[in-house]
Length: 228
Ligand code: ATP
Image (cartoon, rainbow, N blue to C red; front, side, top):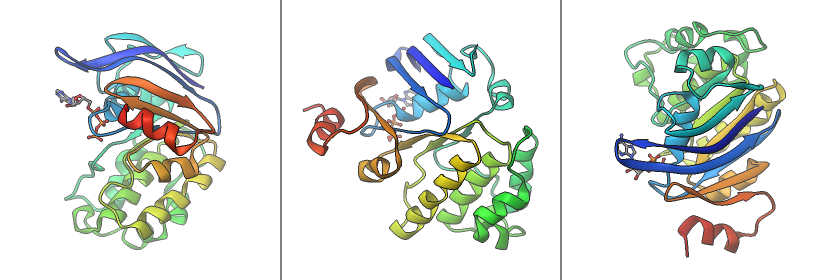
């Protein structure tokens, strides 16, 4: 469904990603792992269209989207949950979800179904987003992405700064998301967490692929992660 070939991207003279190739099929979770600064967020931003590719190709559902603007990729079903959530903090939870609805494609997700998936978000729908806890904000950010009915959901560091019980709750929602026909590409620094849910992993090391595939043992992953 999503196929990336030889993708390079960066910031001015900084080449943050070099020659990345990966693909995600329908109903799959791919976890991109790597240390600080490895290029994980850069990869998600380039797929979502927030950062232009310097070279390489991004194919989505058989069409080349490499040069399409972000809103056009969102309209086709590539939706990013950005690092740090980026909610509109002075708006209520429901108003934030309405922003997601503005990019709505046909599909199973609606306000009612995301409220069912995240009951805490439903309970707090009239609260200001900025007044919620980190976990509630993260659930709201995922809900905002889901109401647009993504074909592929790009999740950047869902667990960052959250307590283990909250992280477990958020990860528990992933099977339901997959069951609704959305594939997931997630970026995660917590390797154990990523391995628990992912069908495949893709490890980045200083902007390049150091390991990709499935069924690796920890020592192999550790070498790819730290480069030693
Ligand atoms: P983290 O887990 O810390 O978010 P990451 O794997 O997501 O790390 P990126 O944020 O993609 O890594 O950063 C990759 C490289 O690009 C790093 O060397 C970083 O310093 C650099 N970089 C990121 N954003 C910018 C920017 N706006 N301008 C210049 N360089 C940047």
